[in-house]
Image 1 (tube, one colour):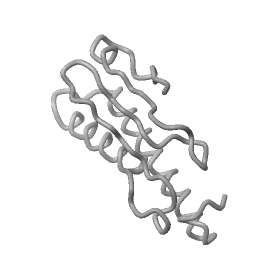
Image 2: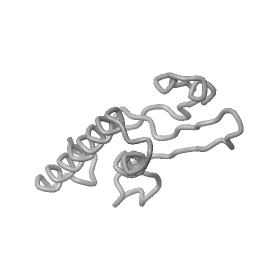
Image 3: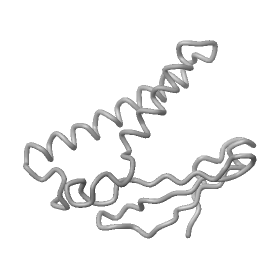
Image 4: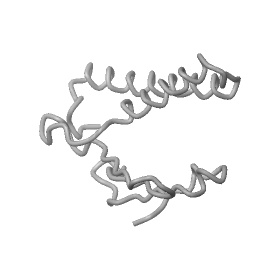
Length: 118
């Protein structure tokens, strides 16, 4: 099991531990993560593992998590915490979502969406 450190930028985040639970799968990415620390009950995040047609829905997608982060940033931007940094982060999250959607659309056009075909 390995740990991630990219999130550690302040004392609160420094206390959060993110562990990668599994080994990389067919596409080279891991699928299971555990977040713990402080008073937080450990949370496991499992990503979709395998094509839905073959494996069923067995985890979340990057798009689902990015959607949650975008919603939070939009909330901050509509309240007293609106700032340039949040606006820039939101723009890049929306751009990431756009490119992931474009990838899916392209795979659908080629007839390979939902398969391990590159």
